[in-house]
Length: 314
Image (cartoon, rainbow, N blue to C red):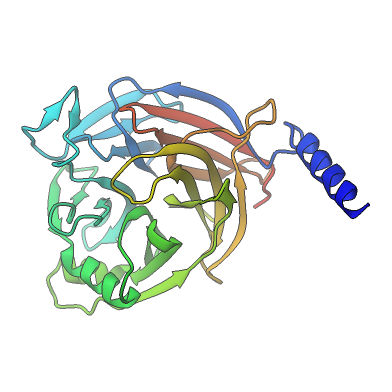
């Protein structure tokens, strides 16, 4: 009887996972022509800024995903069909708005998955259009020291509030937190500030034996939450691509550093959305609910722009 009850319960749960019940629902998706491998996004002064891990440009979009501008971030001779060769790519995976002595700027951040090649960050001033290059190897080394042996760095998400910068590490689902003043003091002002890093460990859902791993993050304005995404992919390492599964959307409370929500993206017919979400921004709509814009990198050189609705009350 218990087995029958469990089966019936599973059937009821599956049957109820339809549009009316899905916490995170895909409303629309479209391609962004020419934008390769979208891997991170942020929102600043009514514009969306986005990067791709093998794309030399910073992409500027409106709220509907229409192209407004592209800004060359790095010169390269390694482009093939608009993409930087995998062995040469800077692997910019995340970006966020940070506070600097000159005002707000965008921090474009690499994964650190290769400590010889993927250690260059860029600071972009959206007003002057000036770009500053940073060697962030000391930060990666400090992160590894904090983690201990047999753990790796693969930063996929970046978020910032007025006090901290949060680095979301795909390896073992850890989040590093560092004061903005420490980061800017060390890297922008060269004042020998200490890189005091806190690390937090999280457990995320599984899908068919694959644990979801952090893939992007962004602070939700006027709330105490970070919106994050986590993707599933059948791969044994972060260099080789694998079969892509569903992506999850979650909320991390910056006050408690606890995850309060994490659910898969669902299509209107009730099935999981299969795609690797690697950039998210969120805001509270007029009903107090969470709305989400996202981009995907499905390892095929294309970037999809998603609009998501939710039943999450903020």
